[in-house]
Length: 226
Length: 126
Image (tube, rainbow over all chains, first blue to last red):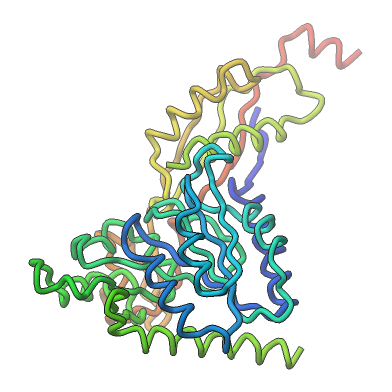
């Protein structure tokens, strides 16, 4: 005999993510989930971004890796509080799940904080599936990775609200068709803003930082109204 | 890559769905629905389910996976179609303002439990 179930497999995570979202909203913190494949330049982008927005925008970072505290060490230099998560304790997980973020967020004093950045585990597949209670998701893609990553990993690019095309300083040395990469991204997620950046030289970071500023200000405004 | 975690969740949900009065009966089938846009590789999931159900009440269960196509509806002109080749633009009017109708499913739909043997039925009716 058939017993009806109809339950989403990730509903436990979704519930926890909603609790996180409420918790972050109460504190008026804008939460940004930054995802990419390994080696796209996420950490360098965040280093440069934090240097430019701190202390005006009070920020903290939760960074996920399977092993090492290398990224946390690099990001700490900005003066932002950093919590490193090593997922090898969770079986080498390929993504950060909502309960992991909840534990990490407890280690940060959210009062007085404007922005919480979550640097996810480098992976274009799994992190896209897991809601962590964030306000926005962005994907970083480096020009060294090929033009068609967005059509190969459509879920990631559908789920994000902005894309950074990073390492543009390498373009003179690559057979990379920037226009084609933009077309592919627009095909998967029409209208999504794409920022061409070089974290190394700082080129293109202005519009990306302006995008963050707007969103942080919106969230702070919402909290004041509440 | 996270198929083992998904497999363990499926096993938890399916096991919890067995009604108390049917505990001990064999689960013949677990019916799953997985959207084509979800980040799950069905072959890997099947492999993980096989390993993770060993020595559990689901050890003999068949996992039936219905793959759900990615279907979108245009919010501008109302056209509904099956998305292919990751083109998320309305083929009728070109708009990217879409409502996703299906493709993100990751659901345990139902479980099939073996019918009780006759003696058990008689015991129950007594």
